[in-house]
Structures are given as C-alpha cells and as structure tokens.
Length: 391
Image 1 (cartoon, rainbow, N blue to C red):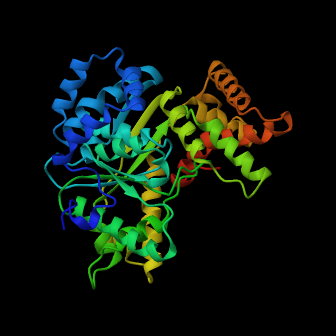
Image 2 (cartoon, rainbow, N blue to C red):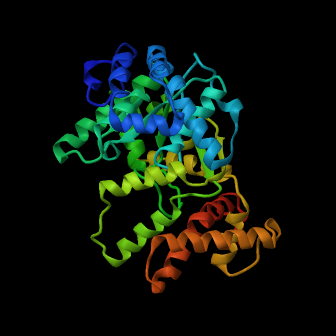
Image 3 (cartoon, rainbow, N blue to C red):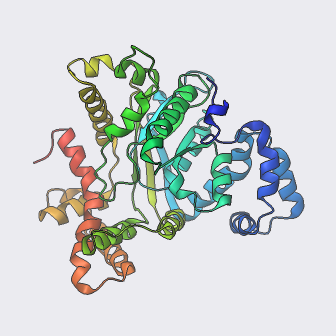
C-alpha cells in the first residue's frame, strides 16, 4: 500500500502535487508573514513569489523554506551541530530506515536530523508529530508540508486500535515500501528528567501492521530500526520542564495547557543550546538474535526496547556540565578532572539563572535545582551503568 492511499488521508503529509497551491495560500496568512520576516528579514513580494514557484514538491519546499530557517536557528542559538556514525546511514535511493531517538526538543530534534541527513546527501526523512502540538491551522499546514504524519494522541477507546494500526501501516509502507526514512521518538512526549527509555507501547504500535503468521521480531526487522542518541549541551527548556514537575508535585491533578507547548516550542527554538550532537547507532536488521530467548510477545518488545536504549545510552556525547551536574547530585568529585573551576562556575551561574526564570518561591528552589541537575546528570549515569563504569 502506498502512503498516498485514501486509507492514510487523515494522517498523511501533503503529496507533491498538492504542495505549490498550499504554499501559495500559506504565505498570504498574517501570522506566517510575521515568521517569514523574522527569519528572512525584509523579504520582497517578488522574492517570496520565486520561493513559492520553486516549491513544487515536499523536498523543494523543505529546501527552499525550511533549510534557511534551520540555518538561522543554528547561527543564532547553537555553537555547533555535529553528527557521528554517518557510515551507518543508508545512501539516498537505497533502503530506508526508521530512526528512533531520545526526545529533547519538540521541534528541533527532528528538524536538526532532517538538516544533518540533507547535508549528508541523504534527503529528508519523514517525521511523526503528535496532534496535540497542532494548536493552530497554519502550524498543521506547515507540519504537513514538512513531510510529517500525524499521531493522534487522544483517540477514543473505540478509535485507539484503528488509529494505531493506521499509523503502524503508514510507517511500514514508508520504510519497507522504500518511499522514505522515518523519524520517531522513543516515547510519547519528552522525558522531563532525561531518563530516556523506549516505551514498549511504541514498539507494539509498530507491530500492528504485521501480516498473519508474521512474528514481532520479523516485522520490526523489516523497519530497519536505527537508534539515534541526541545530546544538547544546554536545554533551553530545562527550567520549563522543572516548572512542570513542580506544578505536578504541588497539584497532582495539574495538566499542561496548549499554550505551555507553544512556550516550550518557542523557547526551544530561540534559547541557547551550545553544542548539539547526533550519534547514529547500528541498524537492527535481524532481531531474531536479540529476541531468541523471549517466551512471550511482551518479552520480545522489552528486549528490542532494551537494545535501542543500550545503544542510545552508549552513544551519548557529554560536556563539562554533565559531569558538574553528576558530581553536584552525588556529593563528590568523581569527575573533577572532566571540568575546570571556570566551567563549574559557569554552569552554576547558568543553573541559578534558569531557576530564577521559574519565578517560584524560595522554598521550592532546592527542588528545582535537583530536577535540573538530574536532566544533565541522568544521561551520564545511564551511560556509566550501560558501559559498566558506574560506581
């Protein structure tokens, strides 16, 4: 089944034949014009018309409109964006991959991966995005133009299996059907404490497209799952994540509002990130060797999740603030050789500034400090445990 089949109409991105007309309408909208002027400066009507004219496909739209935006974000808010493990990427035009990564930033995880793969001559992957983030119609349109397919986060109980199976079939058709690689976060939403664990529910969803008699391991092997570890030296949203955890602590019934997601998106785009690194893991072509000891379907999913996590934990890249945070949380100087006094003081100053942004009463500052420290220390702890260096 092709991904432009009517079966996928409710979740699919736009197809090439639809793009130019949609873009022409999109750039007329007042909100979008404001964003264009923010990233492109005083863009003339003639320049904009030429950009629309070039947007004859999803690929051309990304190249014309989105690539310059990502480059602007990189210039203004990062020190560097790097990638390792490029030899594990499949060349454009050959078999496709399902990239499963940890999730730090709502927009930039997938945007930066798109940019890195494009810059490596490998084209743009499709991306999964939750419909809870589509808080206005123009965002929905841009997302679909960016080759994103929609994950319905809150279907009714009756619809849940139907929608999960539709999503599973879409990903299978895209990857195994040779249409495009796909990026998918390892869990629903970002892990606020950076304890990145692949949800077996995500893997179970992927197996819903299995044919009769096809095992979970066989189906997942067809998807060419490739783990990706994402590391940000600084997470601009760390204080917002800590603020959410404090709100939940003070009121267990507290829930995020749509505006909170918008604030997180804007903060992630504009805030300073320092060095950002993507590490590509080994593609899981044959999962039978990993899952041969499993006796149940759930055990199969658990073993696959553990392998994805093992690779991500091993591949993290660390910076001085990770070591400072680890030592601060554990009350020692185990990694004192990994940072200077100046680097320690810089991170401590940063930490105080982030806590102040929350605007919480002083009695909550220690809780906020511990939560932000955990965000930077937990990936290092998981790495040490996985590589048997933890003590």
